[in-house]
Figure 1 (spheres, each protein chain N blue to C red):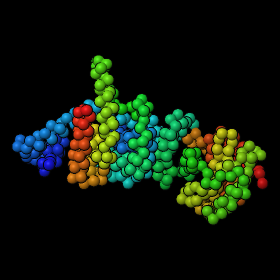
Figure 2 (figure 1 turned 45 degrees about the vertical axis):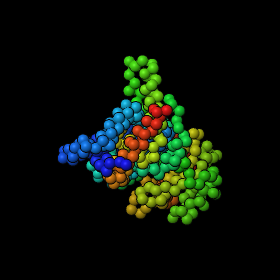
Figure 3 (figure 1 turned 90 degrees about the vertical axis):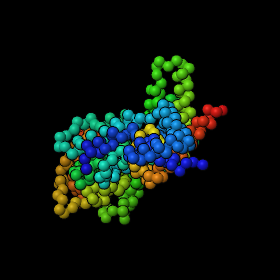
Figure 4 (figure 1 turned 90 degrees about the horizontal axis):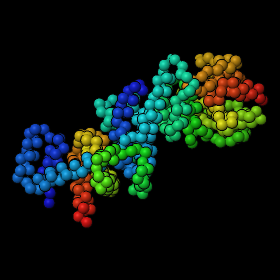
Length: 253
Length: 174
């Protein structure tokens, strides 16, 4: 049978008592053999644990991934452009950490503070993570186009450019500027192109038919509008190749 | 919400968080998965965090993440082989270079045995013991992290210590 004061004695041992209570616990121990033994046992266990129980250190890759993710949020909120060599490629060297870094970057930047460009690049980066790429996987435009029916309130134009070395890989729904948009996914060798499409809003101006290019965190983007739709192409393809994709896309029926 | 604040809240406590994840899951692979998920949750909830104790906040997220994963069930089965662990335990550093080989061997055996006996404790006792003895947290912090009343923390701590020392004595007595 254990002494009813055992938890008091333990609290004394753990330094959890104020002076008056600690004195009471110590006085109790003087007259209670059980609690004296218990106190000695607490000391022995404590000594054993501090001598032999490992304290594991977080893998370096984890803190690196967090720092990498956070550095993106800083670069995104400052106006100075970052060099194209980016955290994302640094991230590649530590495997899963890259996905973590990217996700932290997405989560820590509040969407309201992000420019449209930031949001699109963030969405593209998120889509590159395993299992997130396509909602509908098909190289057939006649499969991809109907898939969007009922999922969004407009019908995005879907074209396959396999003949031009930009095969259609699939599509997915995404959310940009608080609205659902269509994202068409194209391949180019080992690279991926996200083509975001949504109807031109009345208040938000469009860029007009002439494509405009921009770069963010090492990703190239091309923005244009056609037939009442806005288009944003986002990829890590080099700028000239992405412009070629845009030309071919617009030229094809 | 600032990334500087997030960094200041999370990075200093990463070792404590990982250590808890390791003891909860009992293997490095699951611990890393739990940490990835926990850090993402931390980033998600960070805007709502107004507390004074980021360490307890982070450890609570780690604990909840571990409990939500299947790692606690699985941990007993997938035990990593020695030398395979990405998060290098600090304990081997306790082995003095000056120790003679026999002494060094005995210390290594002590580490391995203690690790095994700790792993065998029920999870709610194990986490309480680790937070108190290794992280040296107060009862109040442990109560916050494990979402239990302080009285429960105290009795769990007592049971954990008693079970561990009984197990050690049983092995030494053989």
